[in-house]
Length: 172
Image (tube, rainbow, N blue to C red; front, side, top):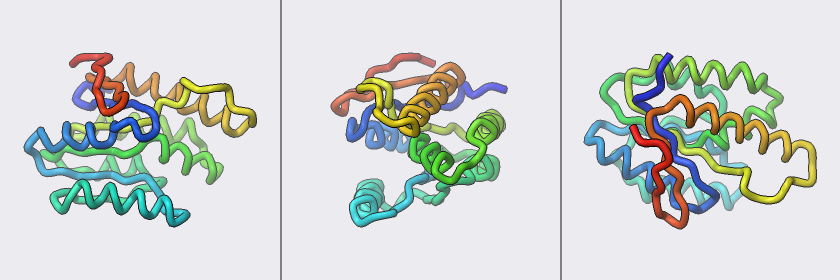
């Protein structure tokens, strides 16, 4: 299974990774699909989601997919550019719902390997801070770190965004 037509955009919170990834997808010239994994549990998150939608504009087809990401990727049409934003929130959703995370990750990799359109995956780099003080946060950091490593090894291009500046880690 090859994921070489896909790419990963990593960065910290508010690093500019989503804006950069949106530009990459827009620059393809293809019809655009945005797979949103966030859920608005409070007013702050609802506001953040609304701002992302406003910035993207109306030329995106948006799929709200907080949990069933492998199934959504399997159903993607050909000849579209896809932005998956973001893998970190998807993992969070899985963890808090007590899903079988390794099985769901494997299913996502299989779906991406069979996807007929290029997918740009946004994910947070969560391992550059202090060691979290609780078991769930450490579990999440470790799962996210291993997931990002697996994605980075599989996709054709990896870019790390810091302060809005892209740093290409792995060229195609």
